Image 1 (tube, rainbow, N blue to C red):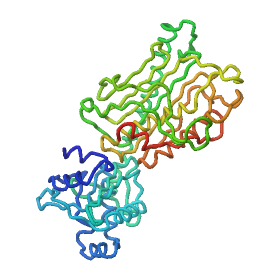
Image 2 (spheres, rainbow, N blue to C red):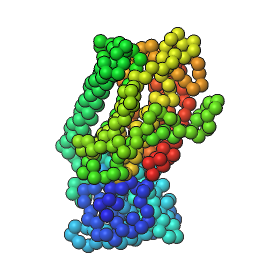
Image 3 (tube, rainbow, N blue to C red):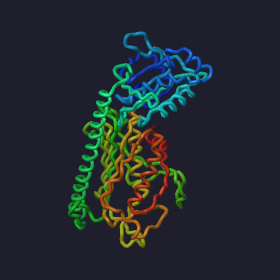
Image 4 (cartoon, rainbow, N blue to C red):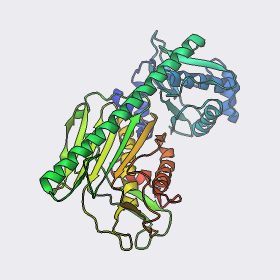
Length: 450
């Protein structure tokens, strides 16, 4: 029970959960630190905060040191307002509520942002009565470490149960370690690109030979004349490991309609809507994969396939292949349409799956890189819900487009990512930026029960 709470997302924790952690004798270690108050060696700092809400420089520096040390190591969680035992190995020993807990959250998080620039951190204050309570701050292992306190020019690292100042030798070691992590992430993306093209070739061959002999294939891609394929892959920038993932039914994360709010007036559509992007994956179609869950939908005609992979190391990938013959758009010169709404929905569904995974596994602070790839027949053009494109304006610049990667930080950043993908898609078709939808992140996650 306690293990699950310690790894749960902060936003999912309740006051009762915090009391269980505080009274559960949880041992401090390389990723957990308990603090009874602010700078615990200076009673005047405690008094100054309780009486006037003034945060001293030493209290700020103490917080920054702890969180820098976590981000330079394996990440970690800091609990303010939890008593420690007197054991040699300190443990949680109850709650000692800190006054003005919401003001403290604002002050400490502002101090952190001003002094160091980690890739993201998460915080939540718990009011346990009269405005006093517990503050929890969690930071990930930073993929761009090392970090240091900008005002002190000091670098710290979590070693065992303490945060220690380190020198140039340890800093060089952190740089090399993060470089190796970056190489590993890059290798994963390259492997997924190769695997995607092989999957598309195999599916095209099966479709053209077994189901529709009249379809001609392209010798370069073994790709039907009418077709497109989409891949969206999310890779965590810090290590994630979910043990025995196939024993967790809640991690069978399928696709749901992307939830959006229209930024512009689209005739015939409500302001708040879901994007119906092709065929959803039904829960019963999931099966265990190698250290993960795999779902595969295939239409009876073989025209559409939709696959979602959720792996225990945090890799999440959705692949959609469409060989259906679409009617040419009137005035489009016989070209076949690629629906802007459906492509946006495809990417937003994948982002939702990443955020659902992070929430369910307590890794909300771990940043992800997201890569979107589109393979399409050159005569396909982009159909927008608000513009009518002529054939001279809508062609994709390349039949195989690997879009610039997107960084998925904390949940607050996901709406901006939703804007970025819309701009990238329209630019790839030779069009000015279009911002038609605003990503409704909370509405999308609600469909997963989160």
